[in-house]
Image (cartoon, helix red, strand yellow):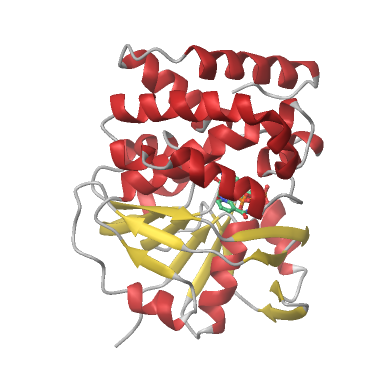
Length: 306
Ligand code: NAP
């Protein structure tokens, strides 16, 4: 039986982590790059490199641009949340009638925007706690063990190809409540990441700002209840404190984005929570103030504030 090809849109950190592990398991993978210049740069290399536990292994994964004409049956969207809609629009015409589209984006908002654009496809949301970064172009470091929750919003049956993730050693589980996982991760992010940017500190240093963290968690819990996500609110403060302690020496992803002058995903994180609260007439003064402080911080550094 011939296997369906995994088309991976965006060969950045997470896209490369998935592509290389799938290729290592002998599964068919194609990278989809943004343009001819990126394709030429990739083709000048021997392939995509995975650096895991200090071992580097390169995989000659074929690549193409968004404008290739090969049909796409299974698409893994591995762009940042703010690029996902635009990137998927460029390949939407290539999706087959029963295409499946996996969305790896952090936060919320981008997934629904993509799904609305491709109503014929089955969109599967992924909440990932794995960690990866690029040490150079076309080379990814697997930096943190984690887990991937997958699910879709009409709560369909688990796809048969989950076996392929198992074969590739990608830790995962299908869930009937992916929205709860995504909201929970979003809440954890909102309670930690913006404060690390504003206080210019590692996660652990937030222990010195316990009152601020506690107030944020209380309000996040309230907003999650308003959104019909009480499960995502349960024990939030405890988990936030655990994450802060367990990752005390780390800089949050938002801290790193700002420190390196990169655009943040604020719109899909804190911005999404504030926008949803406003739509539901749910008071969120602490979160709104935090968002304004963060925007001011980004403006002062000349970074996009959405
Ligand atoms: P990243 O390293 O910046 O990779 C994004 C990739 O998307 C880049 O390679 C970029 O191409 C590509 N891209 C952007 N627009 C494109 C387009 N129009 N067509 C084709 N490719 C396009 O980002 P990441 O860290 O992998 O993050 C991806 C998502 O996963 C984010 O939402 C992030 O929050 C989430 N996430 C990441 C991690 C992690 O550890 N990295 C963990 C959990 C969740 P160029 O290389 O040409 O710029």
